[in-house]
Length: 339
Image 1 (tube, rainbow, N blue to C red):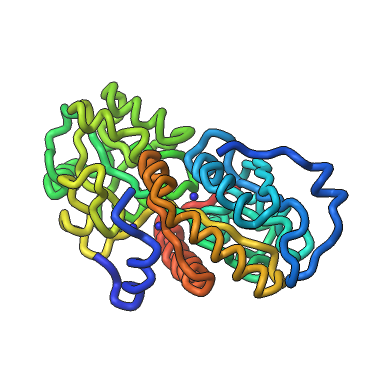
Image 2: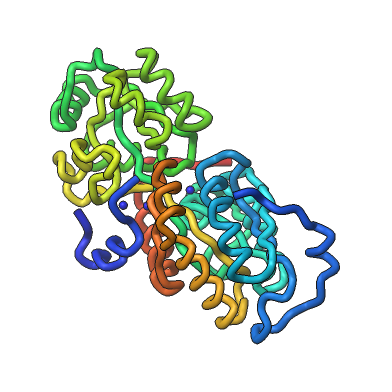
């Protein structure tokens, strides 16, 4: 695994992308042996949550914060099952094939739910037809940073430098097809500059190479860069979200700094197989949103650089559709394809 605003999306953006930036239970046997349920008595057995990220990542960590609260309110354990791979396609393909009863859910991000359909020549599922959006969980803003030796201190100066030296400035990001990769491509398109994109296996390695001066620029998430920005080891040019983030209030947004309309963040949310009963979806949405409203949970999420983004199922569904259209245009213009 989206926070100035386009007029047609302003309400949705304000709802989903805000100011920013638990232990899992085991019980596979219980999942297999528990009796079936109807919407009226949902849930009456454990719920499997397929997380399309490896353990320890921010999305996984956020869901583990929510699990104890969900266990309490639902009256049944939520069992996290990590199934990373292929930009989220592996995990969500499993969810798409399960019964539409609310007992198997998926945690997907911008990639698998919006961008991958334009990145991959073939998909193991249809993000629109095979899933019912349940609840948006969080948005994760990124930040454009540079080594202090770079001859720019503002985004406008950075763009001028890139235009004066086309194809010579490299920018690291978290990996091909990731939200960071697409955010960097969108930046280059809107700024009308040619940057050399350098993919890494995550934000951490990209930020480390920027700190070491191995690359002049990087577009990374906040946890990988915040302390180094504060220590003066990285220059922060702009954050990619529509609003400034509380952790770096002095850093402008990309839009504020000269590219009006730019808005790009990572995001992730919960989906269920298409056909899941509406009362079940409504119950899950209500409980997830309630957990996201807990002050302690919100503070913990923000410490990870993730902004809680509670929303209705309708708003989440509309947001996925808008993100799918947006990234399709960016991917086509940048000629990005993944095997």
